[in-house]
View 1 (cartoon, rainbow, N blue to C red):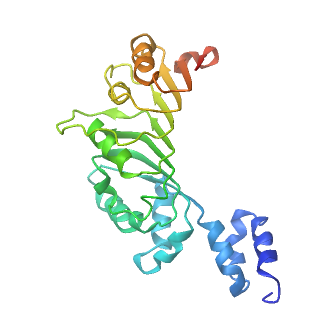
View 2 (cartoon, one colour):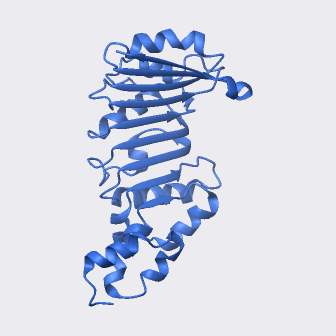
View 3 (cartoon, one colour):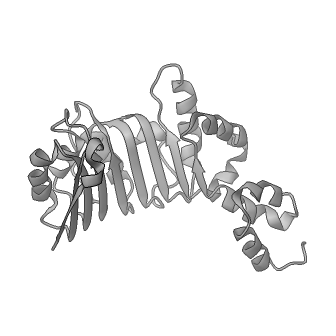
Length: 252
């Protein structure tokens, strides 16, 4: 096996099913790096079982495996019974991802970028940031956006609005692509409304609103992003009327 050109080995590994990558890494020394590179390229530790399996595979003594991770999805669980494990994971492993391009943070209170262990090795490599069902203030959100200078896409999915007691910093730059889902009709002046109030300079904006929010937010969204946006997509939907959802496309 060691006599095979490395380019040929890489082509073989690319075509191997994901469930066989661990076995491939045991074939020969020349198979270890390409197998690990593919095995750890996309990591999803959002489900509880996967989270603890990940902790068993990765430890501070073998963080070199983290150089292969390009996409990571993980939990920010704020519940008292699990807080220790979550913070342990975030603070010990997230700063050691030198090539991370996509980060998804889910289900928890996100107060600042320091919560996830700044300084981060992927500050200048991160292109895509997704926040899913997180509790966040507008000042924390702006601070996080400013921290990643090469951010190309920002996804805000069903965030919970928290009262902001900190001064809101100015946006140093805005990701060219903004994707937002807002389905909380009780939160009229939520994080989306506050964010577009800062008039982000985006090229492409795609926003999915609850049908009960649309009349209140649509005009404010257009006023907030309309000055610079080249493509604005507004989708109004309701869980009980998904099959009759309407799409509105405004291109400048």
